[in-house]
Image 1 (tube, rainbow, N blue to C red):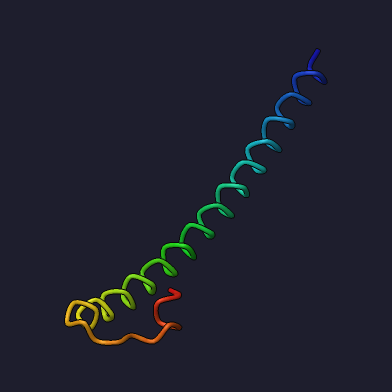
Image 2 (cartoon, helix red, strand yellow; image 1 turned 90 degrees about the vertical axis):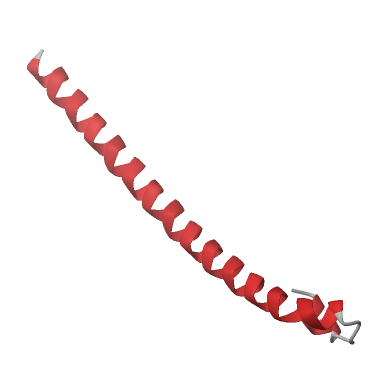
Length: 64
């Protein structure tokens, strides 16, 4: 019976490690996306006044 109990503890620990690694990967990706979104937002904010004035903006800037 104690062998079974020990194997159950090990499985639970493995799952917790797996889950923690998965969460770390997700959090890292979330930080990357947040950085990308911040950069794009800054670019769009810089373009907005030109568009409101009716000035031309290059297509490569609009692709953002």
